[in-house]
Length: 120
Length: 243
Figure 1 (cartoon, rainbow over the protein chains, first blue to last red):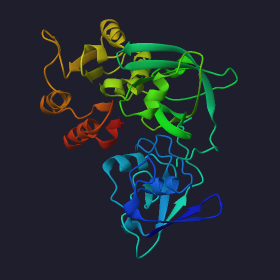
Figure 2: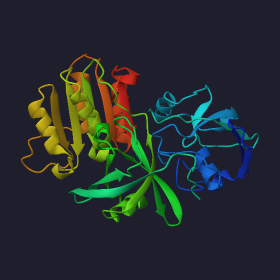
Figure 3: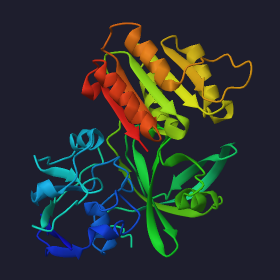
Figure 4: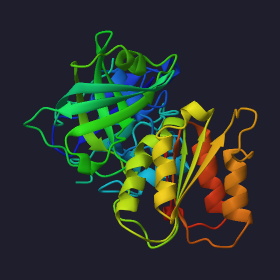
């Protein structure tokens, strides 16, 4: 079993999901086994305006722990993160970051307060 | 289980008109309810909230109309054989209501850059490109604008009459159609999209000041991105959206 801990910049209570990565996908949006897939598949919301197709930045999360347990960034993901508000060195798109293995340490992500992607 | 976020502003619009471009491509013209306003930039998309099989499916559709057209929004899409979103929409009729959030997306065109612009679209990838080109043309005479538009066959070249009319009336705009399944006697160019781009924008000259806006479905988009960036075009001068 793997573990994903979700913190919120808004201060709402954190959530913890324990899951079996071999069971992915857990629903239909985002990369199978991605942070988005795990969250939505366990009833935890995460914005994903493009349907998890790596075409926006609304599922931006900041990884606080166990970055090495996530899949590598693609150039497309990096191009989008380049335009994400509040970008940090450990920013990822939830729809693309696949949790490959967290047997020896939980993955911890922070959901930023704003996903200001509306350009207006 | 998909979960839709209720914290976002949700818009409602009535389907005012449906236009059939060809056998499997339609435009839906969505009229926002009178008390709603949507401000957006050329290239952005709407995120439709579709009630399908007891869930709310989130499906993004680029806005094919221009921001200046007010609260009548056009989305343009193919019927995807295994796509529940497009099947749901193709079953809708005039007068029905759709819900969506938006505008979303960072593939935008606000002001024309001071350099030649090349728009590359494949199939319904023309949707976000269309308002970009109209915005660029409305800005008046400027560095050259080119539209390179590929499709399977002639009927799939959407808004073709518009592109041909613009090319006739605006000397700085050119339209190059490419067909992957051309009829006999087709007067267009024989290259594939990648071959044409490589020859025209990489091999033929050393100008690397152009700006590119690319939209389409699948790996072809990122292959074009890689081709152009490897050839020396600035990373941020190669903008794209891959669906």
